[in-house]
Image (tube, rainbow, N blue to C red):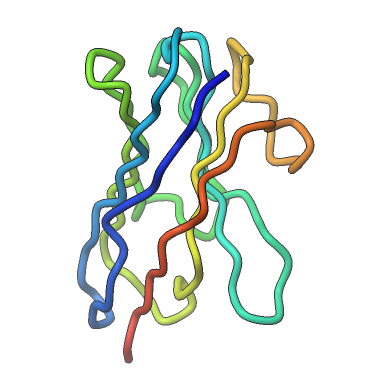
Length: 125
């Protein structure tokens, strides 16, 4: 079992950057696929990016391709989401999710049993 806590959210102007962190506690972090989701007001939670246990072959939603980069540091039990060229449409609560998958299982919410409480990202125009 793993517990995840997000940090790094904040208020930024359009075109700016933020780096989100997802710190995991518990054993065997390296066995968990890690993903980022987001939920804007009045909208459903949606998948943003996922990284497998090896840290290669990341996946991205089309809306963030070329702007966001997911990574992980298994020695630090931490996953990251580097967000560049932010747009007002990126405003949302961002959630980190984890589960015991070697490969990324996609963005179905029930594929991930471990969720953080979220961190707010607000992009002003």
